[in-house]
Amino acid sequence: MELITLVLTIVSVLTGLVGVSIIFWLLFTGLINNDRKKMGKAVKVLFICAGAILIIQIVQFAFAIF
Image (spheres, rainbow, N blue to C red):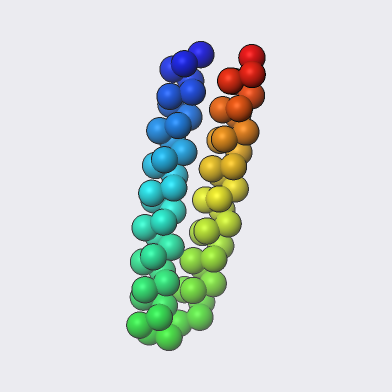
């Protein structure tokens, strides 16, 4: 049970790190090139990563209860 929680925590942290790096890369290149499409993609990546982390946190909470 603790192993599952540990794995979910690691996956959550990695999802956050990858998501943040992609968001900053898209925003930085979008601001330099004045490209609104890249900035829109950064917002989509933000919501996808936030949703994934939220789902992982809900699963961790469920494992903590049982």
